[in-house]
Image (cartoon, rainbow, N blue to C red):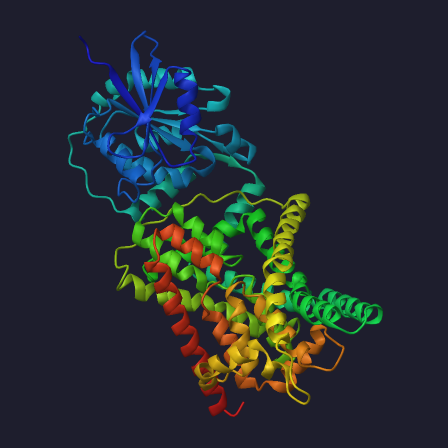
Length: 617
């Protein structure tokens, strides 16, 4: 009995392999897992023009035979004939995305160099033409030395020609000399060859395509790219302060008016104090930072929608590799700027377990949006709004420096971890670059609303609860006449017990007390300060401006800077710790994470305070 011939589809992820496989095999396919691994095996049957059946295998997407994931390992073993129970394919079909030809040609060269009969399916040719790129399949075939068939899998274009090419692949390959020794080709050489082949295959391109290519040369440049990214981040943090001020002032005035309304209409007593000192002063002091958070997310969503975010990840790859991390870690760390919880969950896409663990452990050092209210209130209170240059304010520069400090801290910690407890080699990183496009206003507004609602929901639940509990602890037991209410309260007693630990690094009692509820959510540190000062104040003004005034009057600059330094490194909220425990399947690594973050926060807050005092600030 003649053995059934086998062909395999290979190519980068997102090349359209699955769509082509479905179009070629229809319902004649079986799906299972490869023995011993949780990688899906898809096999089907196609019929050649001669009537001979061929088993077609859809192999997992790969960027290289230098494997970095279980999927790529399966692909390599099947193609090489090393997978137990899997016969080596008689022919290979390399699927290329015509719109991303240069990138996909890198792996294509590696496949063709194996000497196995090969056919290239130049897939999604219609999308390339839509983007203004017209390619010459014959020129590509001549450069690669194998047949190249243009296809549009979803429209079944080019399928007959592709099937015919698969049927004659072995005959054509036999006519070529594959026994000649093949020199070892390095990855940089393949990339250069891919670039030259792609350029030679272009018949014409639109002005828009040329502009996009020119933008990539600048934005992805090894020197200009990082500088542009740094400039973009600088503009973002300047805007967070400059643009948000009028809106924050309006919200603060609204909170003050609401507090005044309550004072005017409620009799003096427990309920009025709860509403004004506990709820409005506490929750309101956080809600007024909604404009800053909306502006921050507006820039992030804009970067994602235009296609720049993926390019920022590409630019950051070199930095990530220098500290032992894969470029795949950038997206989870970037997500942690919004919140460390989705950032930690996003590490599931990282195949290397030590790479993933390191990313989880350093994700809390990314400056999440919950820190923004803390930074905002302290910077506004102690840093003058001095113009350093047109459109450049000192407050924005300080905020930018705090974000950079978090990033640098994460990179240094990653380097230390990868050299010690999570030691291992960094894996490679290749990613698809999306098309540049104009953002859709409706999508931006929906994204902003979703993130604003998440923030307001936290203010109405976690922050509300923590603030009310803290107010109750500050209110009882009642102080004797002439005694400070904070001194007499349960909260004051807790702060007094903790204060000797934090006094050496410049913290006052109110700051020490704020650290405890801040473990529920970072923003609670602001509401804690607002509630603490409101309880001990005879003034009916409970607005954010009043809180800023108290901080300005009662905190020295070294003390304020130490508090900012603490929150650059401070241990994460309880929710983040719980997610880290779930993702690491135990308490060992979350405990390690909390321990090293606490140590860093304490040490750097102390260094900041002592240095500021020594400099006479």
